[in-house]
Image (cartoon, rainbow, N blue to C red; front, top):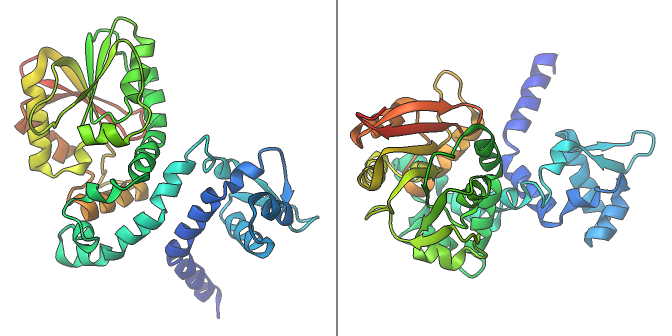
Length: 334
């Protein structure tokens, strides 16, 4: 085997390990292994004892994740490991619960029919799981709260950067569409004491979301954004449009158009597909949205066409936010 053959074999092995790596990440987070290293290096035997797992299994797990930069092994004391900043991302304080949901047993089962979705060009997840609507899959005891908490954690960076780079001081009533716990609008109200907020979501979501954000200036209001939305001068749609096809997005935005003050703004947070520079993470989400809902992550051109048909124009883009934030307002307004 020459060097080229070796490279091809390594590339092949790295390309086909996704299934195993997914299950190993689930295991890593389930047993809170990154947290074990908070106070310093540990032997794999110590980690096994603390997590009540097998030494041989933990040794193999730590070696695997050492190969991709989660841990470092002491070469002068083999079997002793310490975590890196990459592993810290998978702690409960960071994105552990989000990683656990994305690699959970339920998500694993949902993805089994992905090849059929590719074959038919239609979202096959719900049918393959025996439900008529994807959301029914997470409405089992504990599952909906698990999902909501995972989404809450995944939004942390968006909220922090939005408060840093977006000025909400001029808005009197801020409406978070599909706001779940109310975390986003709740944080905005903490910073802007003269604003009031509405956290708008389905009644069933409020029932399964767990503890809600409490603020005397925040109202939790239930409803369906395909029917109507509350009045306001500022609207937030954080990763809502990627759940719907173009027609659904236009319907949602038209309802916002009806209820929004003439000088209002809509802040839309979405992962935007850039055909000139594809991002694997964005395309991973695009595949999930297609498989679950027949929807997709959208290009800027797609979004712009949707905005135009709903009566909006683009005012700007906040590029400092990882998922990007597009700011739109009613046509004819400055």
